[in-house]
Image 1 (cartoon, rainbow, N blue to C red):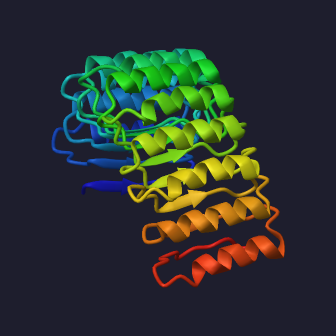
Image 2 (cartoon, one colour):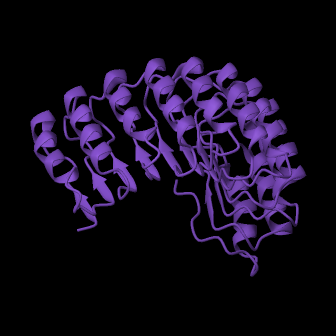
Length: 326
């Protein structure tokens, strides 16, 4: 047995304690454990961490999202993560009521043992700027090899974006996916992030910034940064921002760059009108072969905007597979 799927059950702390007797067995070779939405609280996290400290070297993925960990539960888990024998690579703790103290504990533990973790999912928690600053101290560690970081809806503002960008500029070459949607970036926060994106050592491929209160200036900064370093980014999620036609025109200057290899672009509900559709279609006709998915629903295209988009779709070099559904 290598993988155990027990998600969306009523395990509770008692069930997890029974499971822990299996996990601490030295003959147990389980490397993936899924306990998503199982009503696990602090005691369950304590039992899980204790069991895995007894047998830490085989587990590679823990899916524990949508449980009642709280800061106390995460502190128990952190005692496992700092164990030099722990080889965990993927940890999912979305929506687990984790606050600043929990983020502090996680970051401290992973700084003690940073080289194995590749994916951290911490969305829907109460990080705030303070929690993100603790996490940033991990990200700037040259031994940190994290490739995917999810922090959607974590109440992160400009200061948190500044801290993240600064940390990743210190250690930019590993991160491949950043999910930061639903935070309070604003144009200022995006400008901090842009200083990372223009770094030639930045290899980021997926960036999610939906519903982040980004306006024209943020789109200008983002496009300018990616024009400086265009060849790695494959997926941009920017829906629910205040791009307008002006913001989209800045983005179009990136899309027409022959070095731009973007494959997925989400701009749903971005207040884009005919001029924005014209600019997008024109840019993609200049460089049509990479884009596979273009999401533009909830904008004000009108008949003219749709005609501009249709002229793109008629291009034999256009490889679009998914287009807006109105």
